[in-house]
Amino acid sequence: MIQKPSKYLKKPAFSLLELIFVIVIIGILGKFGVELMAKAYENYIFTKINNTLQNQSGSAVEFIAKRLSYRIPDSVIGRVSASDYDGVQDLDTTKNYRVLEWVSFDIDGWRGVNAPYWSGIADLNASSNSFITTPETNVTAINNTIGTLSQANSGILDSALYFIGSNSDVHTGYGWDGNVTLSGLGATMHPITAAINNRLSANFAGVDLYEYYKIAWTANAIAIEDDGKGNNTYDLVYYYDYQPWDAERYSDAGKNIKRAVIMENVPTFQFRAVGSMLKIQVCVKSELTDGAHAICKEKTVF
Image (cartoon, rainbow, N blue to C red; front, top):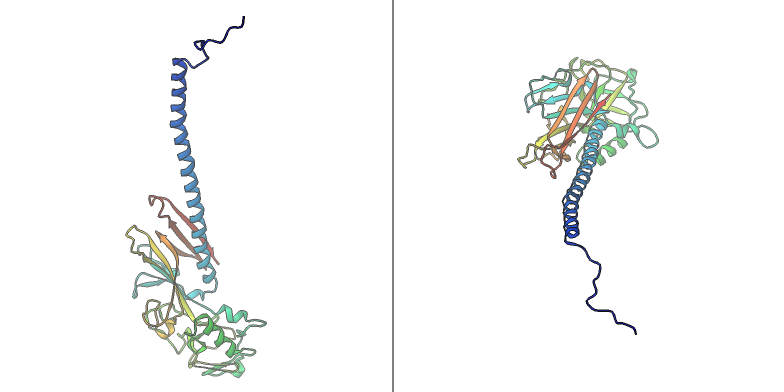
């Protein structure tokens, strides 16, 4: 006779003790598992922020260094205010310099397309105290290039000549405070008054002429400015298309001076001279952190 299974037969199951152990283990895994996941996510966020800050600070330093590489060496200053500035070789460690300024020579016209638009060489035998003759120079092409770069705001007649090897005074030779010596042995920048064929006219009265020259059409400024966020960070701003030898300043309003923000959330921008070299440092923070996390990049410009 076949017996039917009884519905009261015992089936395998967890004991109360086993259930307690399972619950305890799940609780432990839940607690530490969430913490591990949170820590991993936090590390991922900080790694991402770190990489972003590294790229941003590196880009800012490279941007500044590239433009500084075409500086007229004796023209570089650190500025505290409109009237308080020092040559970069004479910076005062007790001052808080907010602006780095310099005059750069025209590299785009120097490169030209197939040949340089200005040769950089003056024929002294064919020059006088009112002009220099510069063989193979194309003043029309220079004017067009400067016009393109300045968005039609400047041209060859806004430019100035600088003789390589001439004497220069950072306080009177470039016009940083509106006081520029335009004639005599103290003159450094020579504003161009006319440009025809390969002849560049300027006031060279009492000036020693040199065989090699450069053309400059703009000064440059890197300024650290309040960003209005109230978190001890600033905007790093680049200014160009202004001529200090014509008594212009980067902060002048209504003169179509170009302004571009290089970097936001910058707590520190520092610079100093080491011999003929310049060392620059840019630090940047992230709005996603508590403000304690900052990345700094440095670069030496020869």
